[in-house]
Amino acid sequence: MHRRYWALVTLCAVLCAPAVPLASAADSTASFKEEVSAGLEEIFIFRTVRTARVRGATPFCADAGFEPVAEDVYALWSLQTNDKSSRVSATHIRPVGEFRACFGATAVGKPFDMYARGTTGGVAWTGKGECTPMAAQPPVSTVRTFNCNLALSGLPEGYAGGWVTSSTAAPILGATAPPDAHARGYLSTSIVTLRLWKNP
Image 1: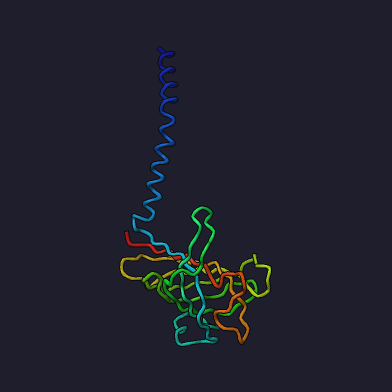
Image 2: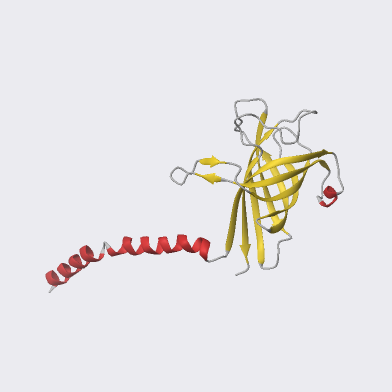
């Protein structure tokens, strides 16, 4: 009796084991598709191009909640990546929106305030948060890197909230430099990810 029982257990283990990873793989594939099709989250990835800069406080920055040192205007453009390596292959495909941003005073090694309001893919948003200088810096003296993180509000009806984060390589502008100045070979100014959450 015991021998037959353990033989059946062993046979079942051999025959049933392959079914477990196959079922998991199928569930995982379906889950990846639902990340987009379920519609609970919308994700936008784009690059920014600074088109204007006004130094000092401006009327737009009155809602920032901090003392601004500059107001910038950015055009937003879609990107293209290589689907085999995920490397960015084109950085200026189509315009997808714009935003205006206010920045607080900077200090070496310390975060600084940021306030922004704009539209991406037809969705209006307001963001408030801070930018943090990065320890990793490119091997040129004309670019400085930092990342910005903003909590979003002011979204259209149906959205529960959102978050935007940037990977920024900002050129150091001299007094006579145009606002869209950039360092040769570097994407200026940011690659941005915007995530919006819908009401379930």
